[in-house]
Length: 59
Image 1 (cartoon, rainbow, N blue to C red):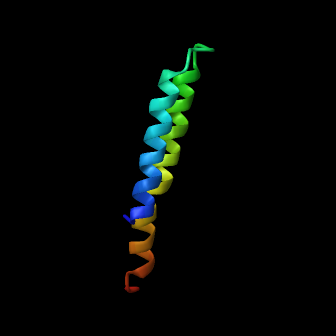
Image 2 (image 1 turned 60 degrees about the vertical axis):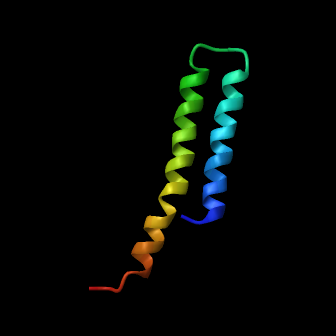
């Protein structure tokens, strides 16, 4: 994982922490936000695997 990818994950974590400080405005807000945070995390964390597969010699 690159340093930039690590910083992006840290920023997503910071966004989550800030979101939790907001007042509730709907019964599903936290669940929906968590779901989208996980999507963003998976997108970033899949990048090292894609690079490794791309750079792997073909069999």
